[in-house]
Image (cartoon, rainbow, N blue to C red; front, side):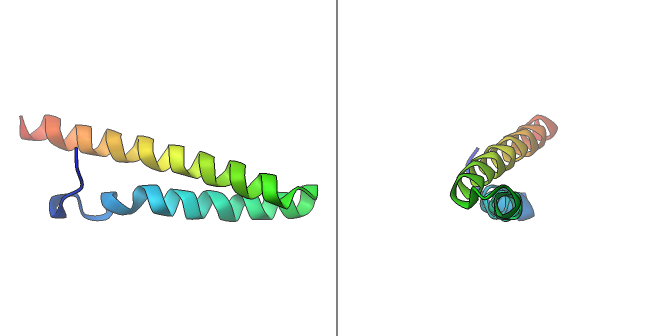
Length: 66
């Protein structure tokens, strides 16, 4: 399940998930006056979502090849 050229945009899901989650965390953190916690939690949630999406997509491609 290592990244390859065949995966295309799927290789960038984890980093973009972290960036997107951090941005959402910053926006929420500004309104709740807990900016640091918002960035940490948002980045973590984004990373988890990106990772899950990555593994589901790669697993789907592996099953399609077999």
